[in-house]
Image (cartoon, rainbow, N blue to C red; front, side, top):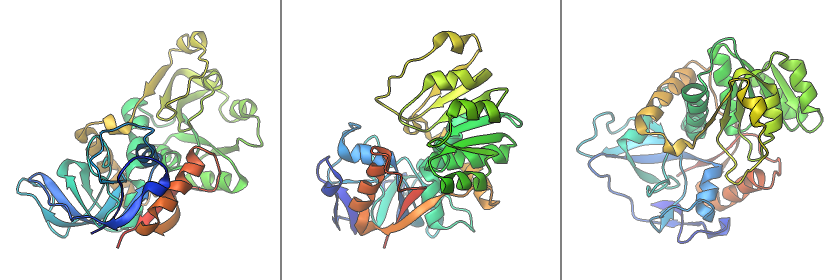
Length: 331
């Protein structure tokens, strides 16, 4: 089978597009004929060695996938040959990744694809929607009528957070870095969108959330916690899920006297049963047209190295040339 893989960690050019043996599914695994995959920042961190995992070389890169069940192991109960499925959490913790024509995936990490959802859409929304759901509902417990702020509203996670807030009956405020991206945030359902490059954030937040923010969902790698705490409402909740090297000052006094809470999490630490609950609601929203991924561009699997380079330029170098997910077609 064709696959995008590495023999050692390092820069994007280390990704090889070539042939590997088609995997055989274990008893509790599903062999998926992959149709589409998506690129995530964490994929580039693992490939580069920024996040150190014990990788099984040759290591197929990638977390997300969507496709059709080719075969199932003897102990698989939920799927059969021909079923359309999507999933994430691959390429982590010793598991092989998804950037290949076939992937052997533990049954617990797969979910049925709704009938009217394309494989490109399902792959693009996988990791980012589960991440958005875990932070917004498991941890922050966002309620109808509350105000949510998401820093980075057109990114993969941020765009899902906006749509989930709207579907819940909450009011979403978002940031973006251009006039076009501000417009996109509003189209996703944000009640207000702030251009952080041209606006004073403190003034803008006082204008749009005079009573404070109930849930602040931080998707960026750099943090201004003094700004965050200043604008959290009493009982406010802060979600942190990015920025491994970030060490900003933190105004403890202002934080605790408001009875606020911080939740930090990495999606891949969440067990299968938690992620399956997220996937069930994600599927309901996708089937009803209430949740859709922002796909910036579609490339081919053979372009995996270029896709990783583009993702890094935007995640680490703030190039600003992406507005949504990179999806790769397989086959």
